[in-house]
Image 1 (cartoon, rainbow, N blue to C red):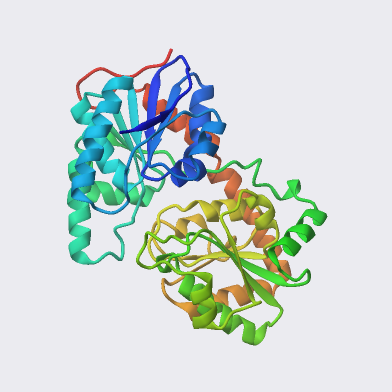
Image 2: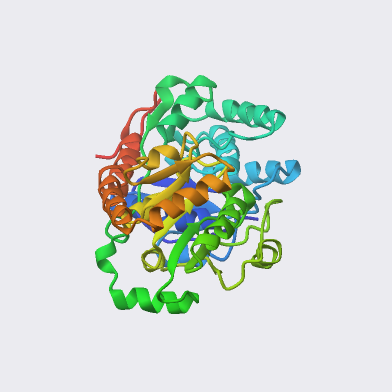
Length: 399
């Protein structure tokens, strides 16, 4: 049975659906609070987890149900049934789905429950580098689900082009919204020198060390193996450099890695710190001198936006949904996926040229202000809630 933690709030009713509570907490919470402040009655729906209490503490009611990230046919059918009951009981005006699993189940349930307006935010080019058979299955599922919603929103323009090319949705349903962060929170001027000193001490980083950081779940597909291999190459030339990995071990994934495994395989001990999940990211970024994300499969990830806003030069993989987040040679560099040597060369280029690195950081901040402002993204999402659905039928409006 679904478990509900609710608050009363008048206004148009919106359900925001994601598979895991961590997605609601760290990726969507500020958007939900924006919608709530705009007069919507907002509810989050996700699997139960350790972040539900933090979500409700921010004034967002949560309905939880047993939803897993893997394909579990019997449980998935139960989830669809549970979602239909929730949608009918709560009489939502809008159901907005996020993340792949919740996106498919939520769109099916929304259609069957007769929800007036169903929106989905596409996660992006996560089909890249998949096994061909698995890729075909996922594309078929997305095509099917794409026909069940009224609008599909895209943070990444390349992902929208791919979706239209692969017929994941009709052209009239596809809308670009961009991706953004809170530029006031992620601002270097908010962090004092004493704060950086204290944060380095807390993280076990020597005060005079040069720090290269990466922020992502601890799984191989995020490029951590290349990060660790590059670290060993860099240390041969610059033994003063230290490395920082920020993010949880994702035990649900087959390619999950642990700090113990890293230390055993790569021989990195005091040279690297593992920080886990953090709620103090601006200060953590301020303790870094450069940021890397050599991911194998991603689309418009959040951490490069945060790093750029914090005036860090960034090194990203050259994926279509990642490379546009950096201006190569100006705000940082792009490197080929899976190439540890090129990653190490790019990092060395940054740390051995402090003046150039500082200029890159300032250019990154300007890029963030121009392209990564979450307020613009939230307004575009709200505008889509107000529009008539592209197909025939009733629209959803706010006065």
